[in-house]
Length: 152
Image (cartoon, rainbow, N blue to C red; front, side, top):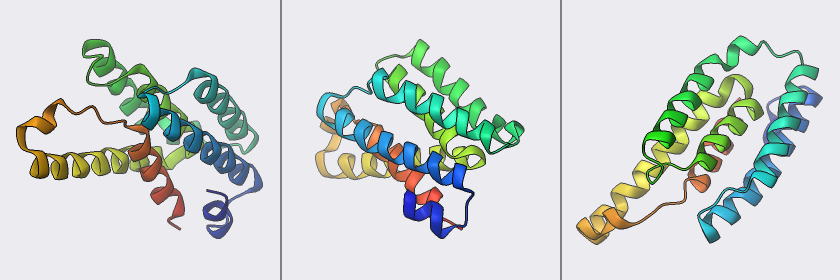
């Protein structure tokens, strides 16, 4: 994330935000793959720091609105069907939203696209038995965030 921030000519506060986001996404991804859990002790402080850095950078908060609508929709899904989507995934989407400011929507959509592609591969290889497989979402959302942050 640091290289992406520097290469794309972002402000120093934006580069710091990407560093915090990248470190958090790395730790969260490892935890989600191992335990299918996204720990609050990582995602909450990282979200607060990224939010503070947004304010320091004077980012127009209206740019966050589309991604916040997605986060709200994910929250509804998590409440209605908690086995389909965990609350940690919702908090992770919020972290990506504040970490990438106006690019959060594209990052979340890309992450879900990566997860859907992987699910198709699983279905093709394992058939109907793959439906019972629980996928950790953090690696895909992190991948989406990295791809989008790397774009100029």
